[in-house]
Length: 468
Image (tube, rainbow, N blue to C red; front, side, top):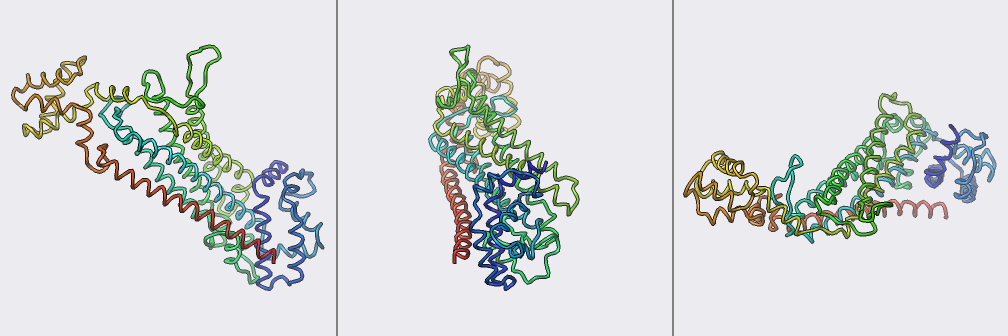
């Protein structure tokens, strides 16, 4: 059991633990809690710690955990009495939660990078298909004509909200618990603000009890990932249907399909299948994280540490893989625009506009117009041609409107271009929305770059202090 936890800590926390040691040392020296001489010796000892060697060490039971192993290596580089002074005014509790937050915030940024990459691919496809007519579906049945751009922009929108949720989770995570010590802070005059700054945290997790015991920052991160994965899974499900011969809407590039060992004709959309199962895995892992934290005591830090951390990081890894694979598959995916348009032109998909036209032209109530069109559709279930349905309407209500006007109402492109209400599929509406989405993409990308820069600036300042 301890060997597994030791290996997990080596894998995830080696660099962050050394950074915490350096930041704590800097703060203790600046506050006068450590003498300049002891600070110099400790800094030299920290400089001698080798990350690769620490990660390669084998658990032999001589140290309880990885923290104590690193402390033993520090003692080997200087007098144990001096090495022990580095642990003044801190605990494994606040160190562990700080480690967790440092790695989790990095994982959130990487997940956000993949969300933006998928969003970028969808924006590119949407811009290329503003005029591509396709059927929209409700209840898994053809419903009304729309455009491929309109469909894809719906996904662009939910990914923007997903990005906002990840950004909010980052801001919750990026608060420093260091200085909370075991759970009640310390009697030494430390500066929690200084260590927070040197480690790149935006602010403190102020209450020391909550800094150690609260787990909502983990729950928020898992919840944000779970929502992304549900959204992406539903999109992927549609794309898999579109790849079926029966639909024939979507054709993936050669590198994202796979043949059969026995059927020469097969073109299996395996990239989408893998993306779907990875999204399901990440969603399940997010649920498992929440389940592990449910009903644990408020103050019991062990349940929210060693055994849970790898699960959270596996969740992030699977999330990134799903997003990355889907973005790559869609970047250069092809669409059979003629087939999509043909499907949008049949199945009575423009019947709503015919009813609307009767309301406008004949001043009928919508219910009366709906009834006329419904009767015409039901009377000719196998004839979805515009002339067939219009002629039946005119037989039911002679002279209700000019025949040419009613025929024009059944044109899919007319149906789409009439829908200029905000959020609709008309090009006049979609083009400004595309520009807004591009601007949002730029803002999200700038925020992401700013967070990376902030963390790197903190690392640079910490290195400069310890080098000087």
